[in-house]
Amino acid sequence: MAGATISEVHVVAAHDGEAELRITLDFGNGGQSVVTLDEFATRALMTSCGATSAEQLIGVDWAHVRDALIAASGRFAEAAA
Image 1 (cartoon, rainbow, N blue to C red):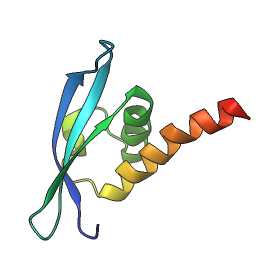
Image 2 (image 1 turned 45 degrees about the vertical axis):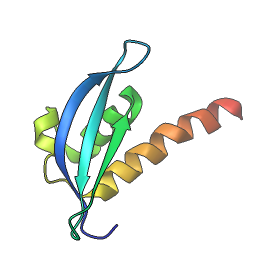
Image 3 (image 1 turned 90 degrees about the horizontal axis):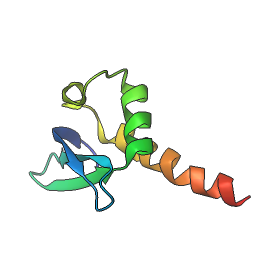
Image 4 (image 1 turned 120 degrees about the vertical axis):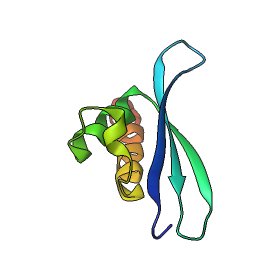
């Protein structure tokens, strides 16, 4: 995924009515991927980027998204332990 950056961000409603962040990643080869982040992952992403609004995430490297998803999934492993 070298060269992938966030190109779009949208606040959307999840099936349970909670807000989620849907981001689009643009790749250097012209490809795109859409990733949806729950509240926990969104908070982790915003914090790691020092962003105070979703629009400030435009242009951010995909590694921040990866790390936010890892942090979000890790909270379930901690709860099970």
